[in-house]
Image (tube, rainbow, N blue to C red; front, side):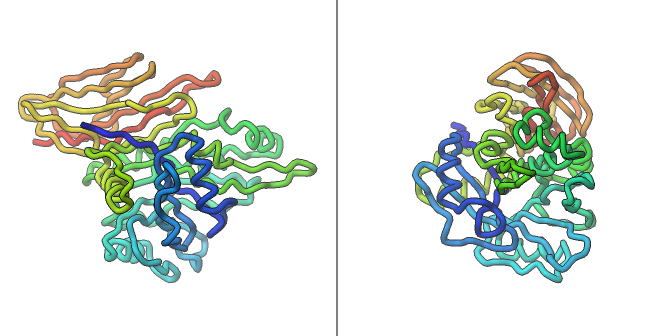
Length: 349
């Protein structure tokens, strides 16, 4: 039996540069209907603040980067580590190696950014693509996409109040990079809100930008586990981290439609595989997509769309090995927007 849990990953608290503490963000997340949070404060590991907060499982990692590097770049989300890692003066590969040495794993944060001059914010793209031994990519960073639309004061004032007008999903170059990396081996994907919820002032106006309340209902990661949460912290933490590490999850823009129950799986000669898993091509593999609501469903092989439909179900009998993943889109506020991006199923042989 498959169990589905919905979480928000890569948010910041007042332990670094966020607006609220762990208890406060947990209460907000519970009201938003989340099952888990993963805090990733900047270069600080807030051990001791993780645990169950009511019906919300809160985990802590770190967003690591070398603060001495100019220009700033190469932010890395480190999960399942026990001790803080000092990133200053370390290469991106050395940071990844230090995470792995603790038995942890990690994801490249906001691989691509576009920061218009108006924002005064640096471009924090990942630049060292010669690294290895990382788990995957944050294919959608909600804050990064938001920043990319802030070209002038007028548009910024609109989006501070109505960010949903602009948001459409992962950058195309991020998806292209992911497909490129998948040609060389498994690379998991997740969504990050990068929520800070800090209040900014423009003239007489004061407004939290991308509030926790908003972010927790927008870019989410749905994990699929073979066991339920038991409220035993170590057991449940292991379930979340295993799902992320092995790609048993999908990214969803739940702000435009609840993706709970979305499924993508494959069958071949009595075997069934789900997201993140392998399946032998043998005499053919039948892929099936099931959506809880109407959407533009697309099945991709090695980065190229092989079939699509508008509806709630899509099937395909494939006879070629490759990396198969799903993208789903929905119309919202007069615009087509990315809705679901699954981790791949790997057809081998």
